[in-house]
Amino acid sequence: MADARDESGGHSGGGHPGEHPAPHHAVFHRSYEGDAAAPWDIGKPQPVMEDAVDRGWIHGRVLDVGCGTGENALYFAARGMSVLGVDVVPAAIDKARAKAEERGVAVVFFVGDLTASGPVALSEEKFDTVTDVGFFHSLSDEHRAVWVRRLTGLLPPGGSYVMLCFSDRVPGAFGPRRISKAELREAFKPETGFSELTVDSARLESNAGPGWVDAWLVRAVRELTG
Ligand SMILES: C[S@@+](CC[C@H](N)C(=O)[O-])C[C@H]1O[C@@H](n2cnc3c(N)ncnc32)[C@H](O)[C@@H]1O
Image (cartoon, rainbow, N blue to C red; front, top):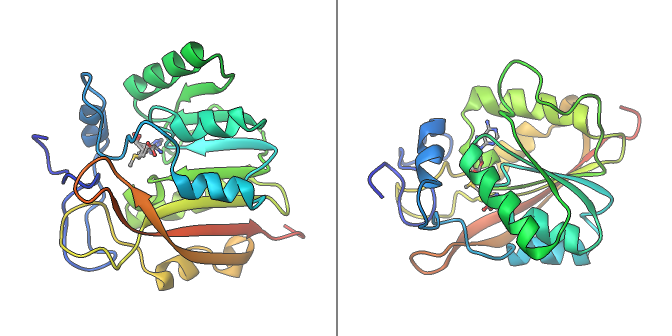
């Protein structure tokens, strides 16, 4: 690709967790131009998200954030969930809608910026599960805080956020921001409204390079009294 993204699916940056610059949305807009798949767009759901469904972590009314062309959202719907997918890039949403139609799977896909100061078109809806593959690790520190605040409003007490992100064990300086366990503990500390945090080692598959990178599968559960 002609921009700063590397072939493992992210964006170039510095060398330490938290130091990678967050990508501008233009990077994502370019990624969905034309027919070539973006590095993260593997044409199937992430296997660890399939496992997360089997473990009962993803269920009920689901919102998939930064849904891209929709593979994960479509999988959740095929497993019987009621799913909405949102992405800031209209071309990604067009592709996701086309897949939904082709496959006869009902998912509502819509364009929205989850870190904009104005409301995203989600009204007062709550979701049993908010899912995220590759969105959290694309956020700046500022937008991460905005997103976690917004997320708490999207989840009812006991609702959960299930997220897959690059880990700080990914070598090299290319790709999205690396995320450490300490950053995750800070982002979802009890004061933010989450009472339970699970961080498991996982693989995030990519259609480039060796085919996967070290990742964290994160589950943060909204406190019951929130
Ligand atoms: C690494 S991609 C992952 C896409 C998809 N989840 C997948 O696994 O194929 C991250 C996605 O987040 C979207 N995104 C980034 N910032 C966003 C924002 N502020 N609001 C909504 N979507 C955003 C990008 O457009 C991109 O599709």
